[in-house]
Length: 174
Length: 166
Image (cartoon, rainbow over all chains, first blue to last red; front, side, top):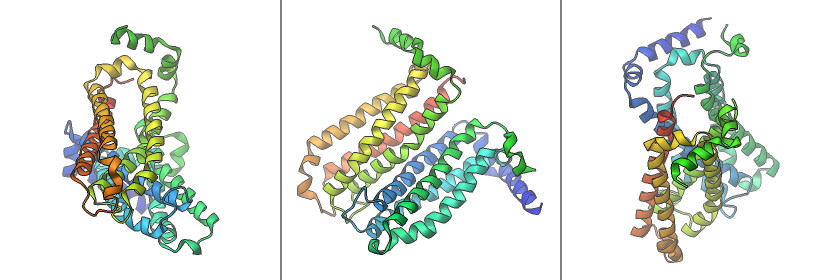
């Protein structure tokens, strides 16, 4: 399929790019970028967790949710930016290998869903007047948000453990 | 009992053997340790940024402390328990790395930083609760905390690189 060959050639381009090549051949650059990825994970997850705790009324109950959302927004967007850039750099060191790694595919699928959810439904609910959103709906949004981002995190953790393509993931690749 | 003999004893316990031999124990506990960075590191960073006067500026300092501290406590407890479990899986190797020793020293320093803050400027939080410019002591505590936690994460990642491959 044309899309698959396009992705694969993008992976080859990443592998051969100056950054992919440079980070791969450096003893300390990969761990260095990885630490930024971890630190941004903490801040991004922390802000999202805090917003979700507020959504279900467990933290900062006395504050309007939209105010808290505005307060943490710059830190959430900033850390997401660091996550994406550092993640892309790490990916570029072994992009072709990642293409065949089912944990990486899992992670990218969840990442896409999590970002879409965060900037549409989650954003709408955290930015709107609380009285106009049903409590059940707030719970659902908070739980879905945590599950989607946990899916990203679990996929990320699994990448290192998955050396090759699992048989069950072969249908995706063929 | 010397440190070496304690580590040896620990690595011979049934629990330690189970951690080494189980396929799933180590990855699961390590995943918990890493993902709890969101609950602990992320919220600690937000608190420090509020102390510096750059995040959540409209919130009262005492409110931010009161709301975040219980989360930080839970997060820290999970970090410590999962960390001790990981350590007990291979204590001799962990202790042999410089990263581990440096991390432990910095953890003690981070704890001291919190204690000093609570005993001094933190106990007088009512006096500067809504100040847009936070006191110098609060800023110092925040910078020390941020620097230490960044280095602790880095050292923690370093341990994994320094450990002998399984």
